[in-house]
Length: 114
Length: 112
Image (cartoon, rainbow over all chains, first blue to last red; front, side, top):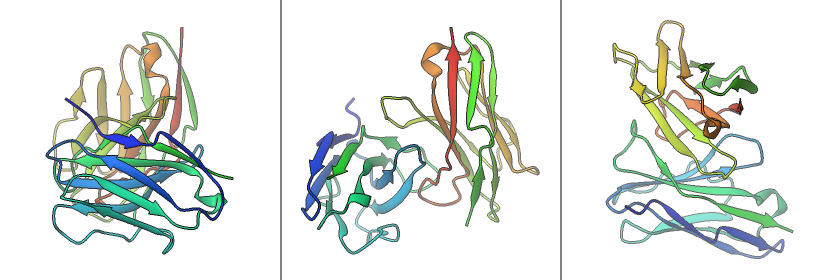
């Protein structure tokens, strides 16, 4: 079956521009996560969606970052007024249930802010 | 808060041999689940194995097994019969938080 997909795979943008990153989770998975991974580092949690509950936004680094999940499926992560420190790989993961279950990751979007 | 320590930034193993990747953690939670993930150079994060903290038997998944020592807060990953495709970064997580929280991981290189 289809896994988690993300688009675009690569994005180069100028400092100050807005970007949108898209995630299509595995069908039927109720939990969706966004993470960020800088070069050679582990994961930095950004935001979590579970069903119709209010998202956990505790990991968003600033108010320039926002995310939504429409219809409990596709999610979009938006970064406004991008800065060079936003350059990283943005990973999306979905899980069939909340916590204590494995997460299935997409291939990521490599964002470069010039 | 939880702290994860993977003391081996880089490991080498000969193809077909077994290798153990260390992971220690510090959590105050009584119930948690241990996860190991692998990230090859292609960048995809791949789930490998999971064990609940109350599971009495060490988890096994194909060539992967966990050497879980709860009292020591240690959950080492054992890969048997290493293959060239096992070359990757390996991350562990005690899973007491809903989201994954990895450290800097261990880079495993399998030599032909």
